[in-house]
Amino acid sequence: MTRLLIAEDEPAILDALAYTLRGEGYEVETVEDGEAALEQALTDEFDLMILDLMLPRLSGTEILRRVRQQSALPVIVLTAKSTETDRVLGLEIGADDYVTKPFSMAEVVSRVRALLRRRELDLSGPSQRVRVGSLELDAYAHRVLVDGEPRDLTRSEFRLVTLLASQPDRAFSRRELMEHLWDSTYVGDQRACDIHISNLRRKLERDPARPERIVTVRGVGYKLTTV
Image (cartoon, rainbow, N blue to C red; front, side, top):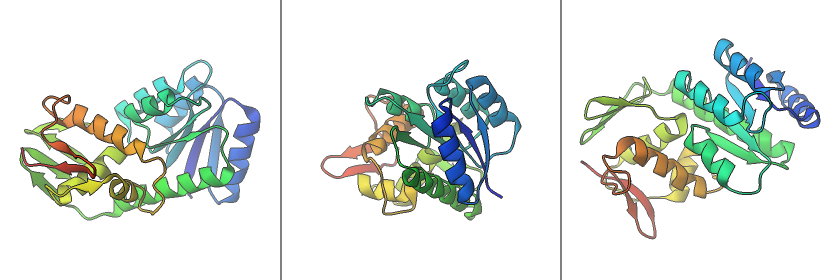
């Protein structure tokens, strides 16, 4: 059975999420503080984590940083703030998706299903290596090398660069990239695409301020070039 970990300190939200997701057939564990969330995420086997960024004892952002140092566990972050700051920060440090409070349970279920489907496709995909210039991708091992040096990418970042590398020098629109990311016509907030691309540039470019590998195509989106 698919196992989910929910880290949320507001009892009403925690109970509603757990009740809804159990009703969808998932096995759900819940924690209400950051230290317990980090311990559970690193010591137990879960398929996905729903993480509130505003937790007592240890913040959600710190939990996400530490989890990403050791695990590719899919993570959906929850934030109550209306500004984009938390959403951007969550994506920058490795979240796969975000949901802003207040949210509907149907929205959360949809995001969970989409992320689990992406994870299943990633794990079941064939072993395949792709080289574009000095960039090498190994889909089976979920490994990226630049000039022979490994780079750590989140699951979402890896899926995006894999699509770009499938057709070098082809311009992909933001919608195309996000549809591939979600394996669905649902693409959420397309601005998340720009955040993922910015993170990829920090990890893959010699000078992220002057990208040569992942290039913006004005009025269209992005393409991967051979460098």
